[in-house]
Length: 132
Figure (cartoon, one colour):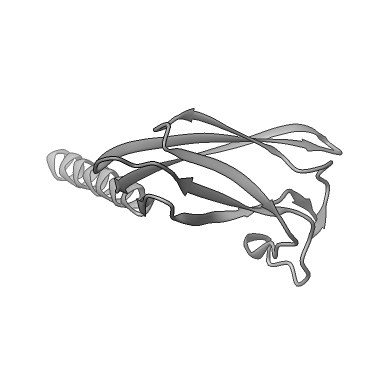
């Protein structure tokens, strides 16, 4: 009986590793030189009301020099919080410029928010495929 439970626990752990690695594969982006892509909405809410003070800062921690990140200011809909109305915020946009040859790279960034409740941070990692 004990051997069987160890096998089940091992298989469950292996399944968790497979699921986590497949979730990372969803963060792949392909960009050609001159292309831009929206990475997602940028906002901070409490009870479906924005508590941001101004726009957040975006900081690239790791990434190719050909890719830049910027926030396009616009009202956004906080879907994860099931809000019905748009709130002040923006959309994070990645732009590839002057790509000379195909490359694979990792893009790691951090968003720094100033909110009524204090400073907050969020980050994410994308795997990039760059093409001329």
